Length: 310
Image (spheres, rainbow, N blue to C red):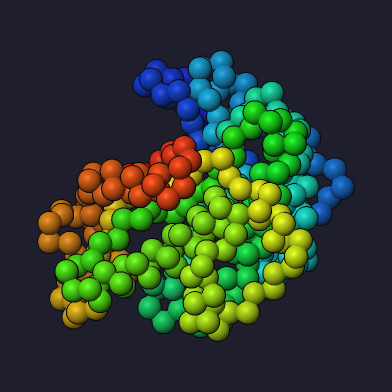
């Protein structure tokens, strides 16, 4: 859509439609191209300052994601598998919080941060070694997020910082077989609550050691990490909602999700061209479940349907 060059026209149309909040992202690489510069890129900072000013001009509140699946490729570290990247991210966040403290009040740290824990179920044959690495890189992101939350509150106590979870607790047992119910519980613990509990409650949940044992994970967790997680809990839960899924221990004849393994089809729902279910009741269910568990404000920040756009 070439938002970089056409954001003024886009925002005018957005305001005309009656929207009052827009979720956007700050590209880390526009601020610190390699991640290790001593000084941020002023041209990049100014672009976002102009963008936020234009949003406010149109009566639109910015909701800003700090990391949306991008990081400086030139960094000499091995991505989020290296804890030194935490400090690089902290520098980036500090600059953003300081520069935009009069323009932005609502922040998200990482987009759909739990997706690595879902990939192993969506992609058949996902390597076990990759699964173990994913748990460690996620731990570094949890710590980085917690530090960002603390810094945001120090710079401006009015800042509201949330996590962004990929999906909600919307997996159903396909049958009333108790084994199906237990399977759904396990999937929700691994895919959703493992992450949301750390970010909202400040510590790994009671079932985390069982998960680590299952996948042969031996996390590098320092005492400083434990304190950071405790002190950097999020102010709100935000998540994406597209569809719901089913799980079963029984043989399956028809699956959902197209190229992704999203489990057996739900016979009570209809599906999009991508094989994703339409389920408004699932949205209501997920909102209730999230609020019952965390008692925090909720926001659905990403949704839609899968269909051909040709």
